[in-house]
Image (cartoon, rainbow, N blue to C red; front, top):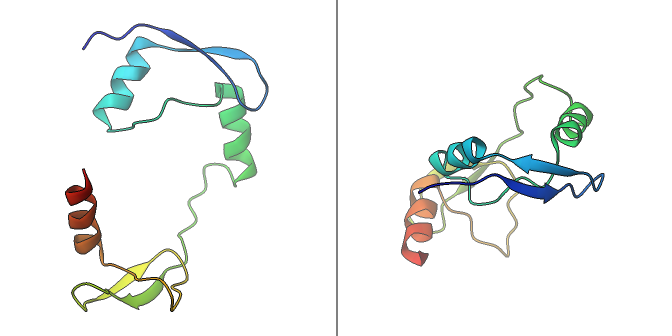
Length: 98
């Protein structure tokens, strides 16, 4: 597919920026479905507010998969009123919806 440069307005500062054909191709190769919403300056500022380049591991919570009963870990606090699925079952359910 041939991509063409697009002009997008940043949701944070309102400045227009170019989403280049090369960036669009890279997004497609990585499976990204959404276009960027922020210009490079606002993306960098947001990243800095989140802690910069330092990697902080997510807190993980143990749960039992509602489908297969396997023990799993999830990056959110499970609630009693909502089912939790292991990665395999979640992936299969997501594929069947497509």
